[in-house]
Image (tube, rainbow, N blue to C red):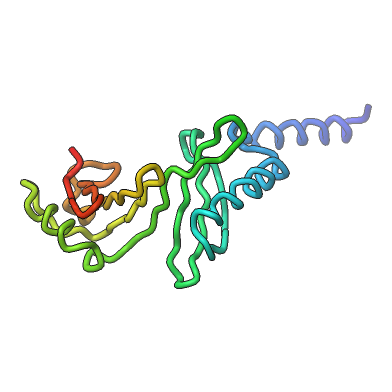
Length: 164
């Protein structure tokens, strides 16, 4: 081999060594689109009229999250798990305005010891029983915890309760 060939091999090895590693959770594109295809059928049945925009495994890798847009423009997320090869919807989530939340839910939140005006509200309809969990978030400068909602209120069959 010539010095030029050695130089090219050395450069190729150096470039490969400097390349960022491929994450272990990356799935082949064909596998991802196949999963999205199967999951989108279930998501479409759970949220009629939805236009699916994407789908991916959540950070923990135990749920599949399908996102889409409803005909009224609302963006939603349909969370699912797979068991015995079949997808099951766990919940459907969307952001809503605090003013659109049922009055009893707002009153229940206001009666809690740590009153705050939420700057973000996620409405999470639970597939198992039809209840709705409202996830309430404080303003960034008022955050006590770094993750998750600051309060959750469950609304079911005309009653509301703060979830401990």
